[in-house]
Length: 344
Image (cartoon, rainbow, N blue to C red):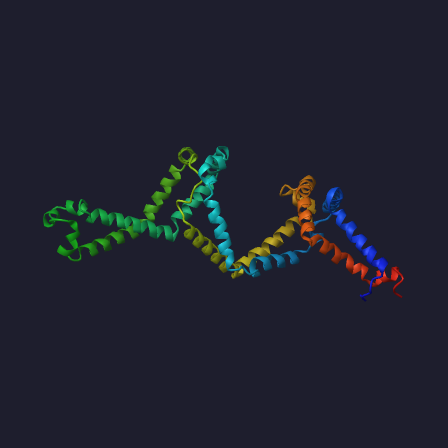
């Protein structure tokens, strides 16, 4: 495009056009223009499918760039931590009870759902008890309990015939008076626990499955609700600012580490493909309806938010800059010069 020196008439046309466009974005004209834009947009959304708007590969690429490649600045953790710290220390947390935030009927529905999902509940209990981590923890707790019982001052070792007469004073002296006794006890107790852990956990599983029936779950839930419902939403006494910031830092470290794995990329890729396979042929209006957005919602939000936003853009000069940049391309073009008789 060749650049042309504008004639006086061209400059006056340009300035008049700029003024017209600025006026068309503000006041009553602005509201009318916004209404027309919403109507035009929604009519288009009702006849245009997702696949017609953008292809799956483009969305996959954008999702992967934003999730995997977008740099997270170091100060992000401080920003998040600062906001979180402000929120947990607001006075409203002292004045707001748990029942003010969680409706009891919703809580009861959750309990009813937990009762109904008995198969899932049983499966979770079985997987928990079969977990190596849980097994090791349970074994260690059993060992410590048995050991403390045997060697405590009022424990079982004092009840063994003949042994109690050999022990004078505290049972803490057992190891000194009977070298190797504690080691033998530990070895045998651990061997017994390891040999019987599976059977013990099987009995525990049976007990839990029988105990956590519908009636007991409801009773337990009622006790939890009665104990917690009137407690304030105040957790500032449980966590200080430094601890909260460290948790935020750690959370972001986990996210950064996850972003470096092939797993996350695969999940994003497959998720986008699955969404397009299921919804690619639906119109944009139908997709928005899935999250409760219809024509009236769009119109109402535009009517509330857009005028203030446009007024702010106008006051700061950005609106005029955008309008001038957009129109200048045409007024400086060969096409305009030709129409004005300044070109060939």
